[in-house]
Amino acid sequence: MSANRQKILQLQCILRRHAHNSAKEGCITILPFWLNLDYFSVLRLSSFIISLCIAVFLFRLKERSVSTLWLAWMFTGGALINLSTFLEFAGPYYWQPYNLKNLFIPFLQAFAPEVAAFSLLTFVYHFPHFQKPDRKEYRVFRCLYILANLGVLGLTYYNFIYLTRQRSNIGFEKTYYIVFYIILAVQFTLAVFLLLRKAVRFSRGKARPWWLKLFNPKGKDARAAVSLARVLVLPAVVVGVYVLENRGILPPYLATYFIWLIFLLFYSSFVVTCLNHTVERTTFQVKLVGVVLVFVVGILGLISLFVERAYEKDYLNKSLVSGHRTIHFAPNRFDSYTISTVPFRFDPDLGSKLDIGYDQSTALELTFPFRFYADTHRTVHVLHGPMILLGEDIGEKSWGGYNPKPAIAPLLMNLDLTQGGGIYFKNQPDRLTVTWHELSEY
Image 1 (cartoon, rainbow, N blue to C red):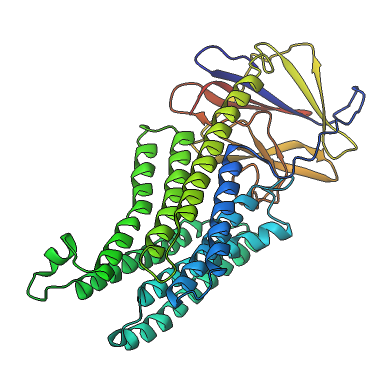
Image 2 (tube, rainbow, N blue to C red):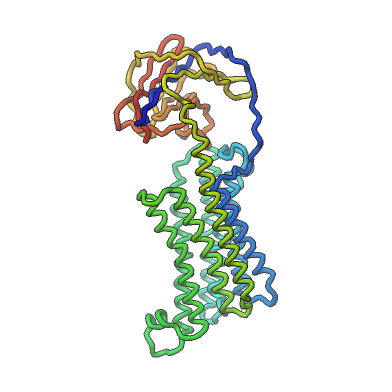
């Protein structure tokens, strides 16, 4: 393997008919950091803590109104959302699909937003008090909402269990998330509309046009409804942050922090704005504690972000894969590899060039039976990145996920085949040599 400053990769992977392991087998024990606490998980954990604290605070209020009770359930749903995103990346080998946690997480990530959205809309109908003209509309809304979310749970089972888990088919996943996000967006937009409609109803001065009532609401209830509608605009800013990230204006780590901070501000602003216009008025002490909590958690997330990036920079070892180096991987009795350095050797005869596009693969028939752990294979699939999948049917073309086929991945890299270079193979009676020649990173 060799690499220069342009990150050009020249890598050969050789599958031998008989692989001998001359290195001494050993085992390295690492502390089980099962929570995988990088800065992303610290942010998720912080969001879970603050949303849970708000929910508990609202449930413990004495003589709470119906709207406050539904607000507590909304933050309970928010706490479950944050918990699900935190647990998604927790656990050893967290990406492996066939475990109880990854069976449960997709349903929690579908159910928790449904709880939050239903509670938000029910809260809006009851804030600051329920109006009799909305009774029929509210019943229709509940029926439609229950049907829509039962459909979402059905799609969750269809996508994550029937297709992905049982058939290794991820073709429906994009459609699933589009439907899921559209349903949530419709409910969120409906909540804003209902609050603005209540502001028009509650605003004094019947002769005034509706837009003037929204611009300058008169009356306590009207001002409260408009204030909550404005707070609900905060999550919409997240869409703008995503746009800035996708256009390369904001780096991913800063975009993630801003999104998380926006939701923290939304949590505190929404509950304070609500309680300021209900019978359970917040005291100055509660406001102070809330502001301090958001500030401390925000600083904690910022510190974790920069500490993590500094740690990643220190951990980076550019000499680990140096130029003109040959590394030997051999399966061992620990169901892993024994890695050893052997004298450098590079075959200049690259063989035939493979026609592989980005995110594609090509099947090659071996001239010998290749034994990999307990199974023997006669067919391999070469991917555009430095990876070889073993077996007739590869299913999903990825290094993890639900693909049950074994893989040999010398390096985990995303390569660009349009910038020169190519992928070559040479099939011999006792070995297959695959060369990713002078390819740049995507």
